[in-house]
Image (cartoon, rainbow over all chains, first blue to last red):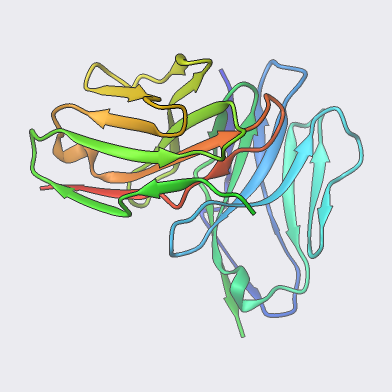
Amino acid sequence: AQTVTQSQPEMSVQEAETVTLSCTYDTSESDYYLFWYKQPPSRQMILVIRQEAYKQQNATENRFSVNFQKAAKSFSLKISDSQLGDAAMYFCALDTDKLIFGTGTRLQVFP
Amino acid sequence: EPEVTQTPSHQVTQMGQEVILRCVPISNHLYFYWYRQILGQKVEFLVSFYNNEISEKSEIFDDQFSVERPDGSNFTLKIRSTKLEDSAMYFCASKGSYNSPLHFGNGTRLTVT
């Protein structure tokens, strides 16, 4: 069975600082994709970043980057230069043939 | 940029009533999904749909639920006899190919009273 674990229910960061959100997963598949989605209070699901398991290079999207450790089945999200608009729920998700979500991390950003 | 459209944004219904949640996926997408998020909880997979049939469904997706793609553009989720515990945000999602990312709609908030 596929599982995704986010062990940090809440995190906080000061504006302009860097924060890292943790995610571990489990799957027996060798070919899969990993995602981070952002869910603001409006409850939209917004794709933040995507990582293909076969790629060793960590994905980067502007201020967002991941640390993908395939052997450890770890997929953390780093947000650099945090902004007030980054405050949201962040969900880690594993896609083999369907998307399985973690329980989410609520990120607060303080001015 | 094309997007997944869901209607209505909010639906209130009485227990025991039937509801149909509507979705228009991105036009060239081939894989369609419904997810549910009970308030304060994680997003849960309900069902996936490909080639005009269900490809996988979760334990949540019991006989009270059904999906349809009636006209090649709409993708609907029907709940035959709603229960209080069906109150949740329902997300439709689609993707163009097996290995592309899911695009989510803005969700329909279903409230069962």
